[in-house]
Length: 247
Ligand code: NAP
Image 1 (cartoon, rainbow, N blue to C red):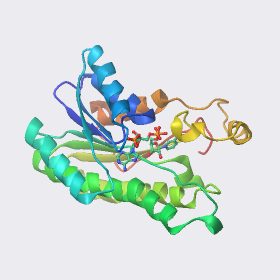
Image 2 (image 1 turned 60 degrees about the vertical axis):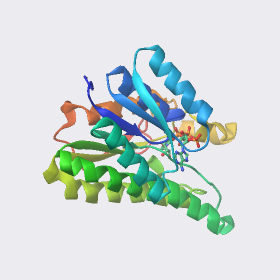
Image 3 (image 1 turned 90 degrees about the horizontal axis):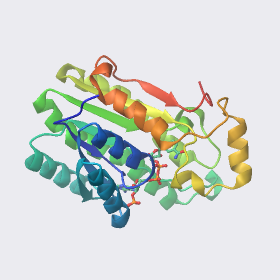
Image 4 (image 1 turned 45 degrees about the horizontal axis):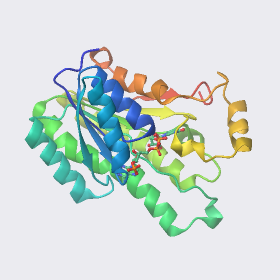
């Protein structure tokens, strides 16, 4: 895959799956925009790592849940780089608890980052992609968006919402040569899952036919495929990357 000359924004790319996507796209020649919300140091270390291998990138800290911040940043990216070719909506948070204990702010925070963030970034980026008559958008959903999970009603709702959003927007943008797809990872070893108890991890492992947790690279490889020319006839899809946990 050759992504030379492509400009890619990956939201939430200072850690975890987003970091792996940023490194992979940069290694294939893309100019990568590393986004984070609060931890600038983590974003800087991704930048250093990419540049040490000869890759090209920059950091832009902004909150995907802010409509105005997202619009200002995406306008500025296109002003600086001429175009925006790839958008990967990866930023996500959890506020896990059972519905009976869930506070209004737990619900709102997760909806605002995980779902409104995808709306904000896709709307702002697609304005330019429509003008360019080309673009690729990949939205990171989750196995729990299709399967459900106790303690994650807020998170699962956002991840199911991303699938519906992907399917609708793919139909709206197809005539402009823009593809919009979703990836639904299973249990991937990152900060988001590291806090789970050994008992919970053991339970999940028992549900995975491939008998291992996924790595960020298991997901970033599929992102690169969806952004590549090899995937030019795929749109509105949900690709499951879950070791067979849910099929
Ligand atoms: P992670 O390690 O917790 O990293 C989350 C990233 O999102 C960080 O870079 C974080 O930056 C950024 N972020 C959080 N809130 C943000 C905001 N408001 N605006 C911009 N950036 C923000 O998460 P991960 O496990 O890599 O997950 C990445 C995506 O995959 C998420 O959408 C998640 O739901 C999805 N997913 C993960 C798994 C899994 O098992 N890990 C499974 C299925 C789906 P800061 O550090 O600066 O806050």
